[in-house]
Length: 168
Image 1 (tube, rainbow, N blue to C red):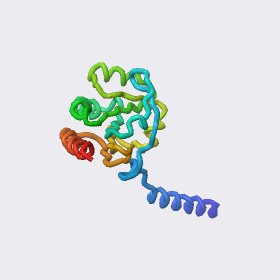
Image 2 (tube, one colour):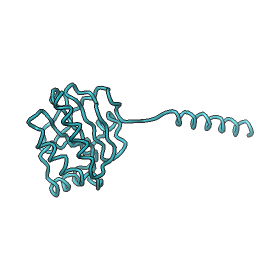
Image 3 (cartoon, rainbow, N blue to C red):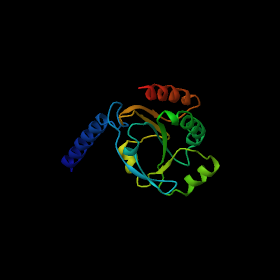
Image 4 (spheres, rainbow, N blue to C red):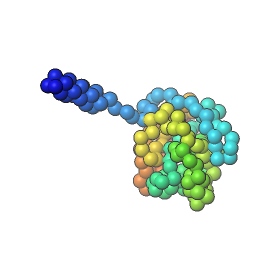
């Protein structure tokens, strides 16, 4: 029995040490963004690779996320302002059931495409760990900026980063 307790204690110590050194983070800045295909709110499949050559802002969101809803009008304004310069916002809803997302979109309509990641494949690809999470990709599809969460005023930072990327 003593030996069993020692082995369990040893395995627990190894597990804690291992977990302490493993850090799950968002797709690292400077890495290529992962390609994906998702169904859009219009029913059309959208592939990220079809937007190569554009600056892309991926915004991962959920209907239960208050900051997500607060951020939407700002993202839509950014999308409309820079669309002619090769910029696109793609809103990626992370919920399994899109009914609540559709309700949010009725309350807060946006002009940018909304995609549905109901199997969490894309969320896992980008290691989404907070709501909302915003990823800015340059024209080559490389991750340039990653933002976790949203507070009023972040939209100014987004705009500054988008302006820099569309000028490249």
